[in-house]
Image 1 (tube, rainbow, N blue to C red):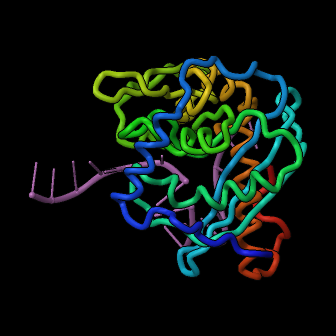
Image 2 (image 1 turned 90 degrees about the vertical axis):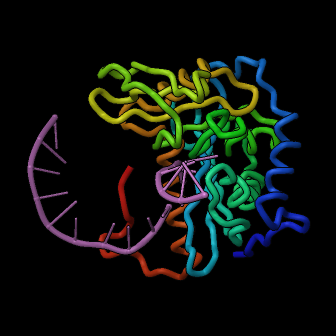
Image 3 (image 1 turned 180 degrees about the vertical axis):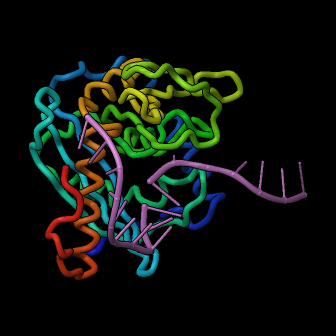
Length: 241
DNA sequence: GCGACAG
DNA sequence: ATCTTGTCGC
């Protein structure tokens, strides 16, 4: 498999990344409701890292939004393009994720990213970044509240509470399973916060995390193991779905 | 000023 | 993110 190299001109330090982020931020579209829930395609995106070899494996899994069945999968392996800096996560994985998206033949529809969208120190998290670069609607679903404040949502599936940045609602804590820790949802590009939450609930009929994320997470780990030349694990495939 | 802080 | 087995429960 070919390794995606870091693009020429890619930000080399935090100052350069901040400048790019500031520019892309101006292209973010926030006044669209977004695609209808349960129609068309939804695409899960995720990455796995091997810091030792400086590699990142990305996966894009397209699901039928109505049935949640897999329509197409694609992966890409690349060089880690930036160190992990809170607030600059996108610069670490974007080139490889875009390569995986480019390898798809199906229409990706809504992009479901593993991380934040508008819930970001400068309102431009990974989901916004990928949305703007692809022109597609996108949402961010994160597993942790980052540095934002929130009150625990009610205990029932579907209960939500605002994620606050200095009093401004930048996302929502969404209970996708009764009695289980909520996920943290924010809008990316061309989607409303309410729409992002509705999509998230539609994508979590059974588990805490969206099917898109679970599918992509599983696939990128396999892609990384394969790139590293791993032997199959004793029991065959790691986790089931 | 220092620490915390998506993945 | 990643280091990591078994185990309790539906």
